[in-house]
Length: 136
Image (tube, rainbow, N blue to C red; front, side):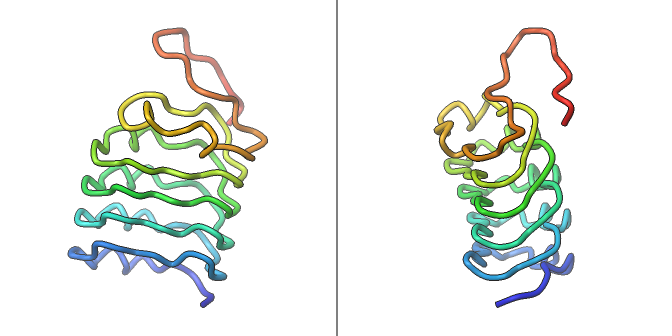
């Protein structure tokens, strides 16, 4: 399968699984996917997706699995994702993400290997210390 993810996907309010992995999906992740309050699994790994991870994904309060690895994503890991208490698996390895790795909320239990091969990523954020510019 190839093509782009369309913003209209965000209207599928009862959708629980969006599993489009190992395809040739291109373009960006629509911010409108954040409207999918019932979504349990967002699996978009092994595609050709570009752009940032939308911070609106943090509104997906039922999300358990977020696998975006093996794409061409850039920018930071949105801190809004730390508010998803149901999140158990996140894998963003093999992209071009930057900044630091969140360490609060569900990220406390995510293996650092799930952030591997993002050459501009700087490692786990240090809680309670002064913020620093990561040029992200």
